[in-house]
View 1 (cartoon, rainbow, N blue to C red):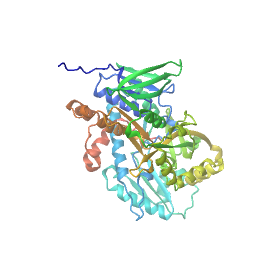
View 2 (tube, helix red, strand yellow):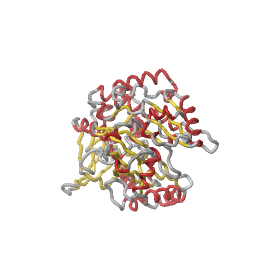
View 3 (cartoon, rainbow, N blue to C red):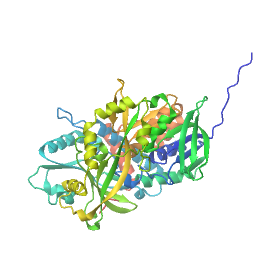
View 4 (cartoon, rainbow, N blue to C red):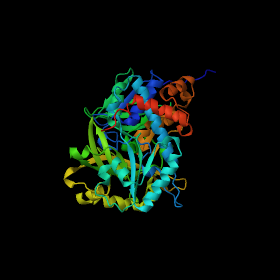
Length: 505
């Protein structure tokens, strides 16, 4: 009796990356470093990389390390402050800095000043209740190696030295407090992303296609994926076969995940939130602020709406932004369709979406209030952080579009999540990234987690383990638990990234 031979299907690519943002760029470079022989195809709907959430004007630009973001340290009903998420995010950002240092050492990235600068991170609050919260937060964080350089002050004179624009014109009788981390950064993720794609495009067996839209995804009997692509310039359609597909299309990821029909993607929904900034146009005012100052979010506000007065370095020029102001749009991308939200509603996620909506009345009210704001209302919010602000010095700038994840609960209901979520098939042949903050800053850790799920066998090999430790020397270790390692790592990455040389002055 003859044994039937197994049919081997030739694929067009080992890997297809959908979306030319920071996630696909990070995964593409990681994979190419781990296995230079991999063939990779990248498809982007727009005509340039990093034009959506990764673009400098479409995100906060904060190197999210939990130094100043109060939404990462929630206060419980009994008054205690939970810092576990802050520690995890701080660890992840250190991983990102190590990876970028490796890319600089290898010549993959050329000039760190093109994408990262040293900008102090501050939290600022007023009112006794908030001051008590910030002090408790500070004491809890200070006990961790990752935050032991944090400074705390309730002294108006000292805080004025840190952030003069925030203090000028402020009521001296009002209790205030601030924390400060000089190790904070501003990151231009758009510049970083484009530089990584420029490198990838020059590598063997890598093809980067702009103005191409993914129309469908079909799993084949042999485990590969048929990806249907439309060239938006010519209108021509074609099919590509790949062993592995990553959906890193920002707000567009949910719709593509639904097209894949994997069981792991059933029940996920999305809630879109848009944003706007107030951008300072007065160069004298811009030059007087040298920090990222984060406050407390309004009740019901999504994390992307935590107010902050930010020094930014965009295309080598200093800028000053305040916001973001949240809004609502049914688009899932800034350049998306108003039918995106309706198209995302399926039988498998309608119950979780309704359930999450009923539990998010505060968020709905908050968004309605934000949408109805007048220019004067937006300016009033700015004056809480900058009392002497002049409305003539500011103009409105449209920010990015985010899709918050709605996740199905075991009970069948749903919950609105404000982080990021990697959804992968059981066989590891496809994965999608959903969600927003702190996304870009923790991209390297997120992609390493994805590799552990989708390239499980390769990740267990000595070659891949050795290469990962070359890229991230502290891989598998916790800086929060080893102060000496933490300090050594930060000294090395700060020197390579020129963070000790680029303080805005």
